[in-house]
Length: 139
Image (cartoon, rainbow, N blue to C red; front, side):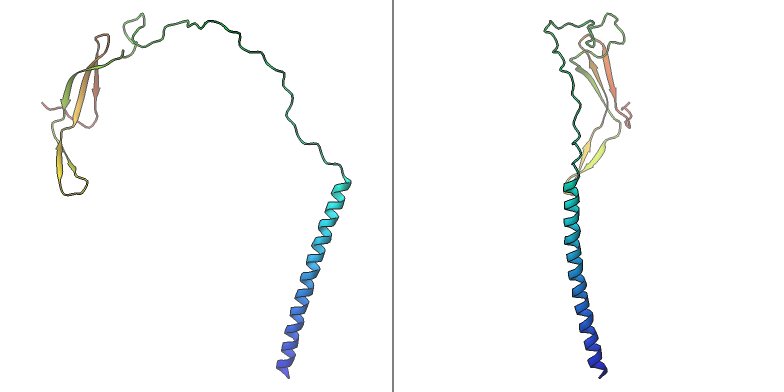
């Protein structure tokens, strides 16, 4: 008898859930309709627009000019004017100790001499030296 009562209660609970689900769906439809009707009664707010700008004139045609010659190496002062291209290599100094570089497959090593410094001469005959860190020149 108890089992029969439990089954009936379970069936009633299922039916109650379905009825509530249907009511919730019906209530949602009514709510959406009400919102749609109310929004049709109120005027829509104006869309924001960009403010109007006055048209600007064009740049009049003219001949280009430069007030100063700012190219490196061509200034009136001989110092502080930079390195003038092109550079020509005049000397190269290697480090005292070679570096051993492992091959890609790991089966061999290469002995590589590291560059300690390179000396160049620029277009105006000035000496330019590139010294690389972490190297001591060979004596």
